Image (cartoon, rainbow, N blue to C red):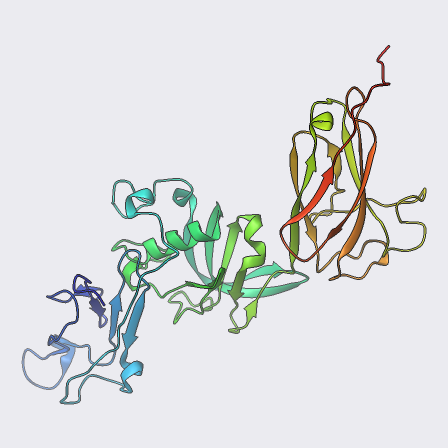
Length: 350
């Protein structure tokens, strides 16, 4: 913990800063009985709930509560010691003003300005692979990267304004933690509570598709869910194809499918991308990205979850000759299929 860290607490009355920064040793009032009759109706009794927070920009968040010190209330005549360490958060690189340029508690810089957090009153169903699961808290990532989504949520959890985009009101600095990085994977955390009642599972809508394989979600049953693996890669073309306005490409299966569906047969089938669209089209640049449903593709009765051996062809008219290449789409995001066509010297447009 740094000496400049501003710790704060919530004992049912909202976030309140401690008087001093850094490690604190401070008494706080937990009961008030103005007429001394033992009935706190004319005052308050805040002895049964207490959470202390350490949430500083670009630091790992931490909090501690009564359960962490093995107590159900603060009435015992002793000093309570709450563990509340922290450290540098290596996954934060954007300053607060890069999210909220006016520092008014509202994100106004893209893509953060389109992100939100919503606590629901009823479970929200989301489909992951072939199954649907319920979640009570939904983060809208506005097609941002996993790092940008994490930065937005961590920023929101330090604001003293309402950060629930739904019908309720929940101040950001007492909102439960929702995300964490484990290595390069962004995982949602089971929220400690959902004041709206829809469940404590957390899901992310509208994230960058390139991050699909590096996300994990906790549902309302506290079970971690992940998407089937989506392989990704690039088709690369040499100048003879790029400079040919008529050049096209097609990707077929070499083997692993039913007889007659492999390349070289009249019934050969094109390989589908993750959305079920054929990997084929016009050559529009030196590199064209593609993705592939590695864990789910069963085209031609092939076995899902196995490497796909493919044969790819490309041909132009003016400058690119016919070219055939073989490759393998594996369980990774660095698959490359390269087309190197000889220059076309025989075609003549008459």
